[in-house]
Image (tube, rainbow, N blue to C red):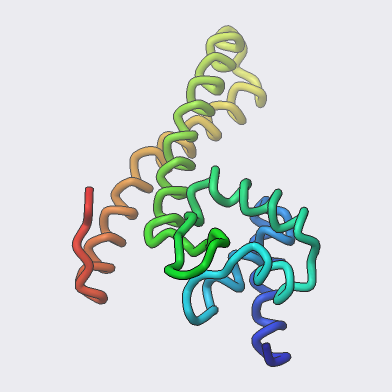
Length: 160
């Protein structure tokens, strides 16, 4: 792998790390974004990224359970390979949208606890509750617009 591509993968890893993923998981995602063919075995991931097989094993489990990658079989090879799921990032986004409701429920509970107070605490909670309500309402619409644009750009059918 050339130095510029390795640096690009590392830059992606830092980006994903800042989003909450471990750096090695970000490096795996980065490599799977740019590799050709679009899959790698655990051994290839470890070798190409210069990390231990144990790290790859742990991080592929994290990425599998997050729905970002999937296992694939490759004819004439015994090793399991991994590739990005076509809709992995969209599905992750959907899960984050669904998680907004959990916060809204907590914030509303806080508002009920502070209902008799008209102070800054109530205002902060009301502001945050309104923000999350806005996200809950608008983000699904934004995701739907993205899917329309994706189909227009790439001619992909939505399988849902």
